[in-house]
Every structure is written in C-alpha cells, then in structure tokens.
Amino acid sequence: MAVASATTQTLVALAFLAALIGGLWAVVALVGRGRRRRDEQLWRQWHEVRDHARIAPGSGAGALGQIRNYRQRARRGLKAYVFWPATGEVGAAWFWHRWPPVGAYVVARGSWGAGEHHSENVFYIHEDELVAIVDGDAPAAWERHERRRQQEAPAARVPLS
Image (cartoon, rainbow, N blue to C red; front, side, top):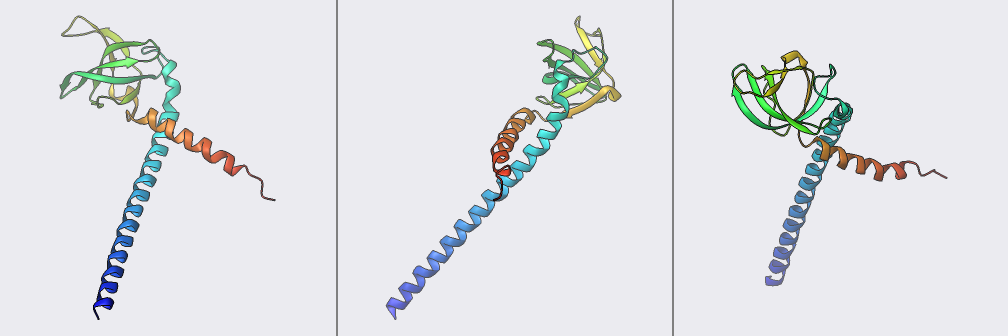
C-alpha cells in the first residue's frame, strides 16, 4: 500500500508540474501574440506617418515631431517642446485643446508665432491641425514587425512540389 501511495503522490506531483508548465506556456504564448498584435497595430500607424518626418513644421503640410517635454499644461491646451526630425531642432509648440503625452509622435500643421509669455518662437497647432498622435513605442514596434515580416517572407515563397 505504501508503494502505491508513493506512486500516486509522484503521479499527482508530475501532473501538477505538467499543468503548471502548460499554463506558463499558454501565458507566454498569449503575451507574445498580444505583443505581435500591438506591434502590427503600431507598425500600421508608424507606416502611415513616417514619411512626414521630411516635412518641416509650418510648411503647410503635416510635419512629424516627437513630444520631448512639457512647459505648461493648461485648460486650453498644452505647451510642449517638440523635436522636429526635418529640421533636427527642438522647438516650443502650443497644442490648442489637445494634450499629447511626452514621448508620443505627432503629425501637425500649424503656424509659427511669438510666444505670449516667453520670448520664444512657438509653433501654434489648432485642434483640427493635429492630424495624428502615435505612441512613442511605434518606431521600435515597426522594426520588430519588419523583422518578423522578413523572417516569414522566405517561408511563404517556398514552392510546393
């Protein structure tokens, strides 16, 4: 009887261990699948806006910039410092009735003007001139998704004989 009891305990322990490993594998698979989906979503968003990086702010077309820091958060909008890749400069921008987060990328039209409270040139963006706000993780997600696409592409082209 003692041998059967020890064997039963071992089998129960192994079954528990197998269930635990299976559960962990399922969680890892779900997390990976969720990240792939998020990467694909960010890939689409970044793919739509990345060409705007060549457009300088104030040119009449939507320019891509990244919010680097806030200067003022107010009821009427947000004054932030934005890095504009087309010019390679960081400049002040006022977003009327919009509050994009630090790190986010924005595509915006607007016009330059003198700041009201500080003697600096400010890029004024009215609420209808903010074309897009994209998560700051989008460029990295775009690269991950592109690598996955490149890895999957040769497998898709193998002829079936």
